Picture 1 (cartoon, helix red, strand yellow):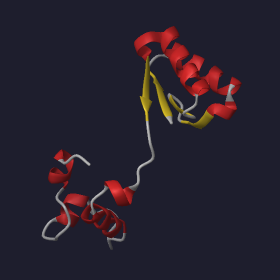
Picture 2 (cartoon, rainbow, N blue to C red):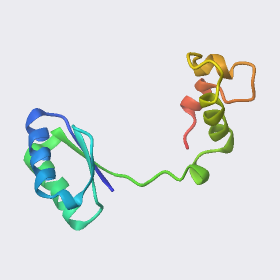
Picture 3 (cartoon, rainbow, N blue to C red):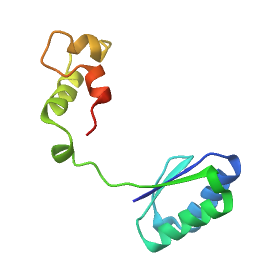
Picture 4 (cartoon, rainbow, N blue to C red):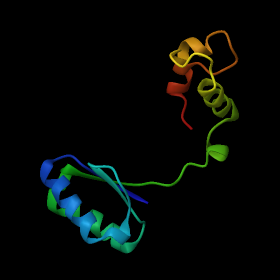
Length: 112
């Protein structure tokens, strides 16, 4: 997929118009950002926006996250355990303290 993010009012207006005109290419809209299908038309539309608005448009190529291949098991287990906690207002750092769950500071600096 192609992620197109806009940073100006004019770029957002053009993006909205492009999305209305080419609905079949739009995977999902997020207001200032849109996911286009990774097709030649999707690339054309994204590049057209950048040609018109310059640095007010950012284009990124994305791919779905396979959590089982990309995310270590301790992180997946910690996420599930945290969502299953008894007190919903407990912050993760406090929840993880004194357990085998990964520390948030360690996770912050670790690349996937």
